[in-house]
Image (tube, rainbow, N blue to C red; front, side, top):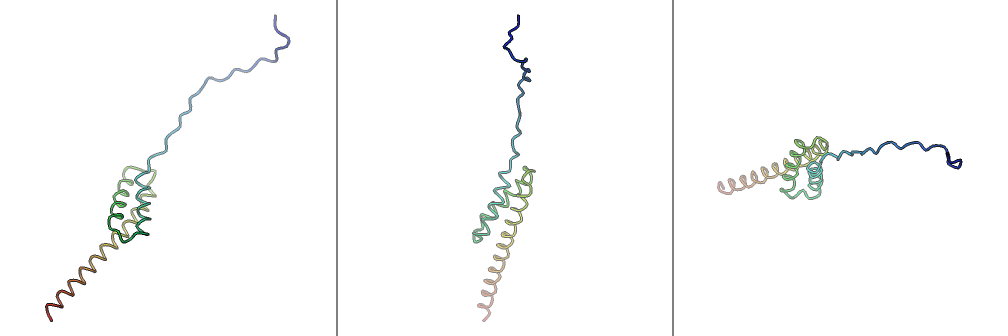
Length: 106
């Protein structure tokens, strides 16, 4: 005999489904390159920071397609400062060479 106080039959629950979440792609080297490029703007007198940032940018370009934009920005910023350092060194050594040759001639 059925119970008259029981309501309508309950719908059955669907079976439990496990939800898989995809991990975000790695972008550590790209972010590091961009941050070091920005730090180079503030601390432009260092020669080591743009070199390390440029290396991280190259690694980010090769291994992290999700962070490609940040890696390119880091490469550009660090590359500008490296070119600036090279030009500064060429100018300073050229100036010293000019001073040294003019002092021996006179």
